[in-house]
Image (cartoon, rainbow, N blue to C red; front, side):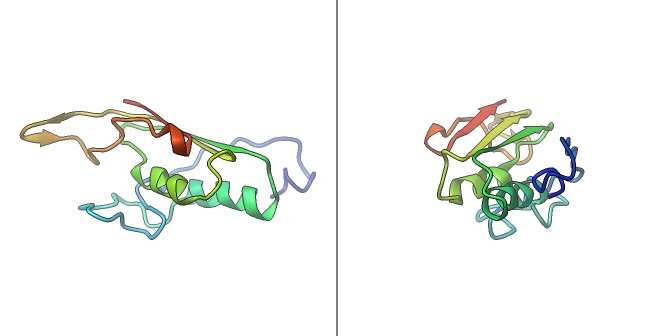
Length: 118
């Protein structure tokens, strides 16, 4: 808020926990767990900047061992993909008897401005 109101020139937000396993409605459909994520802090901040401050575009860069499946869900639900970008770097490992949590993030969704780099 302070940067967007002109009180400060810049900010860097390193958010822990990011809340990236919590989706638009909290726990994702067909999900076993949302880790320790109850609120998606990063997505809430991005949507706040877009809606309350009318920022043109926001990019969410998620660098974590786990895919931000909840953030991806929020970005898909948001009705203006030209204004919101999600980039996730994570581990993806899925075999017949094993799947690294949360088992998502293998593919991009360019229609929703989502890039996954497993």
